[in-house]
Length: 161
Image (cartoon, rainbow, N blue to C red; front, side):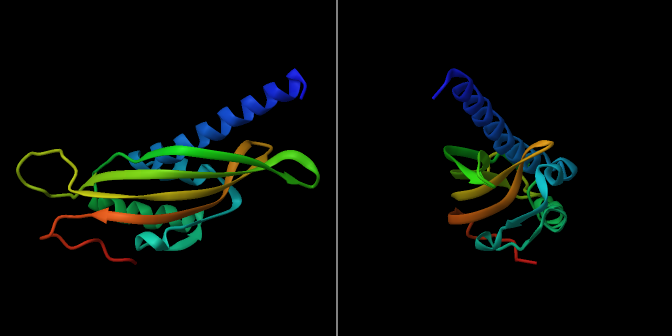
């Protein structure tokens, strides 16, 4: 590999990592316009394993906006990111796959007592499919694979809409 190719690969890795971080921040901050902007025009997300829906970025942003009202405090951590670049139309590096684990502590709205500690925590794995566009790397698909959750015994978990 030439130094130029190695540098381009490092720059792509940093850009992809930044996109995944922007995804987590947009969800945690409730910035649904920024969330939609992370997706390619035909981008989709699938939250069904976590009790959610599957749809295009606008549909998912609307669903998340409504659902996340239940959790005014959230801090979603995406770790152990495994990145693989792929091929599209025989050009190296036009697609990427990221598989990463997540832990998502949240706090239900209206909880009395003044505590800020999370009372709902879930974890699992994300599968991200990315595409290089004229605007940079964008999400083509996001699939959430929730593996576990811990919620208070006296609290009902959010229902799927």
